[in-house]
Length: 182
Ligand code: APR
Image 1: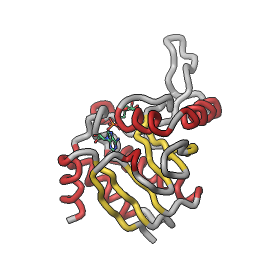
Image 2 (image 1 turned 90 degrees about the horizontal axis):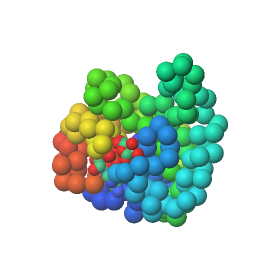
Image 3 (image 1 turned 180 degrees about the vertical axis):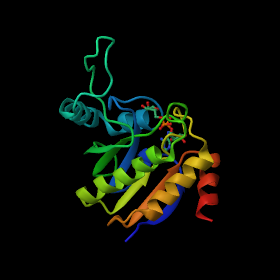
C-alpha cells in the first residue's frame, strides 16, 4: 500500500501526527529552520536523544587532514527517530537532506530522505507522518524540483503509513506541492 498524501500550509511544530519529520543536518545537534523550530518547541529531550544517537553512529566519512575520522554524523539521505518531546506527536524522525549545490542536484539523495523516513515510520508503527519540504531552505534545493521528488517518492514507496502530510511553511512551497499533486 502507499500513503494518502495531504497538504497543509503552516508550522510543522504545531501539527498533530504520529511522527513529525525534521530536516536535520548530519550533526543531529539542531540548527535553524525546521530543525530549530522542532528543538525549540519540542524541548531538550529531543536533543538528549539526538546526542545519544550520535554517540552510536559509526565515524562519519569526514576526515581531518591527518586522515583520522573526525566527529560522527548521520549521512545524507538517512533517517533516525527520537522522542517528540513536547510536540503533539510520538516521534520525530530526523533525516539529513542533500545540499543542492554540493550534491549536484542528484534526486536520489533527496528521494532517499522520504523513503528512509517512511521505512523508519513503518518500523515504529506510525500511521500519520508530517513532512516539511526537505532541503528547500538553507540547502537551497529548487522548490518545484523538491516537490516533484517528494511527491513521486511517496507515491512510489510501499508503506503501512496511511497519511503523509506535507506541511508547507509559505505560499510558494504550498503552491509548488499543489502543482505536483495535479
Ligand atoms: N514548519 C514547516 N516548514 C518550515 C518551518 C516550520 N516551522 N520552518 C521552516 N520551514 C520550511 C522552509 O521554509 C523550507 O521550505 O522548511 C523547508 C526546509 O528548510 P530548512 O529548515 O532550512 O531545511 P533544509 O533546507 O533542509 O536545510 C537543513 O538547515 O536548519 C538547518 O540544521 C538544519 O543544517 C540543516 C539545514
